[in-house]
Length: 368
Image 1: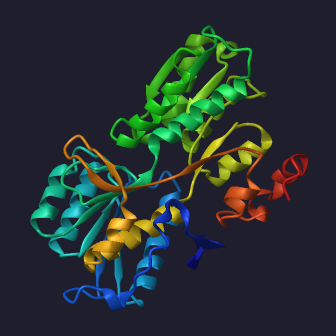
Image 2: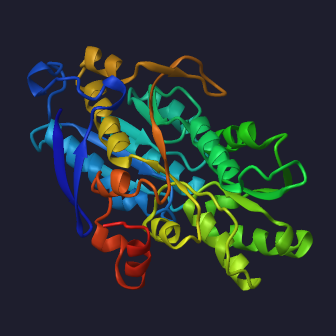
């Protein structure tokens, strides 16, 4: 099992990759294609800044992995679109014009970027869809099992509600951005667990995943449904869960109903230990980012056997079928497994989670 240690923000992040049976595949610069060695350029296009994971984890891990795989000869060119599809199109076009060797694309708008993916294809530049399944002729896709994410959230919500639940129980759904194909998969997975079990009193596809938009929706729902009639809230990610909690606090709620999340952001982990948020979904960004970098390097260097072993799954997009893929597993994060997940994987230190006012909450759940 290979390990890479890099410094991310103030933390030391140790990456251990063994899941899915694919990440232990060997291969070094010695077996690279004779037409392309270690002197490669990887273009990395990430979608937004509201979620802290992209700048804190994804970008530095991809950069470190490319450097490690190419004996520090490879380069990563990085752009973040800050939730603007038009900006991302321009960023990707520049990478095509600059003749990068491969592009890792986390699309702001999976549909609108398809034409630019086609331009990359025509220019002979492979495109690997990262985290979100972009349309167009992509060469591969890496993400988490997104429907499973929604199923885990839905099951967790039902477990939190307990046995005294029926179809009169009302919940609110805050789904992700309508331009993000992952959001539809999260929603589908959640509904497979919730439909027929509870009443979905309100549902929203939240523009750009913005917490302030979720907060506004929740404020309106409270006025319409009645704060005492909302038994739980499905929030597709942690940022929106934070917006939901702000709206509930503004309405005078002190004992929060079960609220889901996703991404295991530090604020969310701290809300979980204080009981404000019931759960999040932990997705190993180190695992995803390193595997994406390995796929990109293997593709450019012509290491077909390694690339095939890294993409043993298959997925379909609205425009293309049977796309080589890797789907990384996920874990429900609750007070029960904080140590075994985000702490053990080096995402956060206990000293970060339990800092200041959170020290007592950590002691109360024996988190140490």
